[in-house]
Length: 295
Length: 331
Image 1 (cartoon, rainbow over the protein chains, first blue to last red):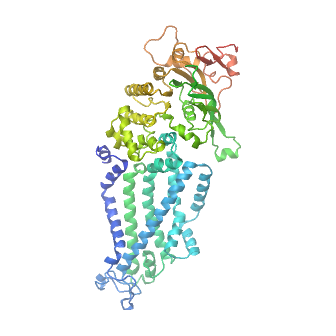
Image 2: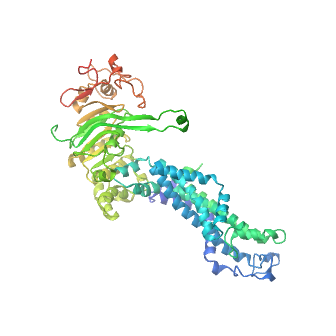
Image 3: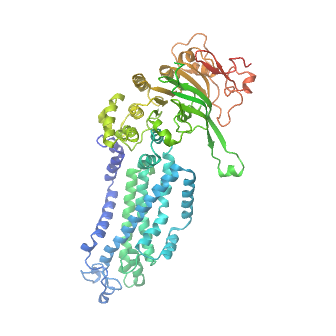
């Protein structure tokens, strides 16, 4: 199938070819649509959420979902403070997606620059960066994040920072390895022979050739970061109440798991669906843009 | 031509690469090995001349070509271009020279960035050296493409959409669009089909004649070099063993290695009296080159002295010289 696409004479750039391959993968398209749906819900939260997510009413305490005798105004039931679970889910998506996107974006920019410098310049630059990466890799991710959050205090900014501190290592290692391979290519030598600066060689010659694996891994890591944010929020180290976040919602429902399972279960399902959708989509991205990594 | 000041003067240039030791070897106190890719090479290239550089793969000829262009820095000796020593120049000072000294690569697949269009590849030299905008560079590239046998419609395409010969034409356009004085051709046709080889050679000779280009033409193919070169230098294990006018090298080779190369080169009619002696064995490792004459381990005419004493260069007249104990009075 992809062979037929590659032969298509109308298509030019390698990027366009990958895009064509992606469009022919129904699983990836489905996953992308699920992800986009959740993103859209997060963006449009004030418009589509049926209730104010922070409006408590103890008369609605642990009210069940509509099919278990609840009311249509609160379709997925209410939590221990009588807040609407559906509305809190919709607002909570903002935190998950924003943290995931921001962390991966910042980490990718930092990691790409560090990896290019380490791989292309070599020498002491490489030793310093590789040393730092190895040290950071020695810490378990969650323990590292918990420690940092404990030092910096909870809050949205600090979650992003704490996760970026370790997350940049992932794109950095990939970019360094790819750069080491790419710098020996003759097209790099050709650019040098023309008098191109090191910045030009790194950013304009090498980077476009190694971007596909970085983008593919960035999407996988986004799912990972979303889980980490949920874990931190579950432990009470994430965004602070009353702001809704999926992780803290699971945590709040823990005490009522036997009497009111819906309080924990729906945010849990939301995390599962979003993470799975992103993972399936990134698989599709990998097949389309980085055929080398296929089995 | 000999009285003219050479465009390129290479003097006793050496280039070694240090082989990194593994941590285990470091613990065992193994000293890092040094690979002498180029071991003291001297030659001149006159303006407008084509010097063919020939030798087996691994003999250091590509390294020499890159060292001349400062893509590798020489470890010893000097390279002068147009009267100025360039081998010790800082990169910033050397940069203006880059537009006058270019290179055409062997592998037309590896030497073009797969993510850049022809317009970007051919236009890059203009952007780097003439401060051209993307549009100006593209316009000039469009004007230049027909001269290498491509059409301006190819500008928007990417390297993977071209054949090997067409890609090599793109590489030639990139190297020649700034009208350089000197071009290193690093086996520019050896990756191509024989029928395409002739076309590309034709194209290079056309440019040489039209613009008075000076070539250092690296190849392992005597037939190709014999066609394009004015003079030929023969390289073995990082050293030039024989250098002279093309006719002299082809008709009366003085070094046993050159003779062996000529003997294995396919040709239609074998000259009377030439024996077909194939060389035995492989190129010795440049990590540990043989003592004395580097060729003595494979030389059919080796004498005892060859194993102990490195031969000096003997002038055979008319610009033909050789480094071999069979010639000159060193016996």
